[in-house]
Length: 76
Image 1: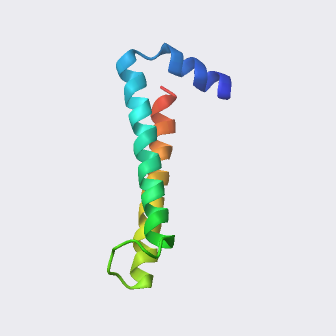
Image 2: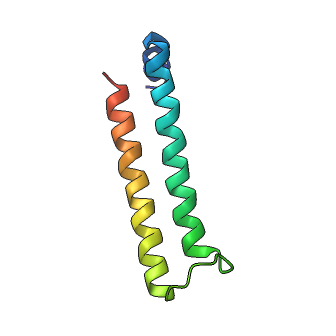
């Protein structure tokens, strides 16, 4: 599977590779932001802990959805 993924990346145009890197970057941004909101206590957001965990979880789930879409679009 990894060889197929690498072969598909090499077949893409420069713009396609740029969009792939951008998609990976935003996946990581949403994942780290969700973890920061959940677990970093000194983050200057004035929210109740239950809302912080809910919002952080929502961001992590959204990053997972973006990752799955990125993997599925890369198979084409």
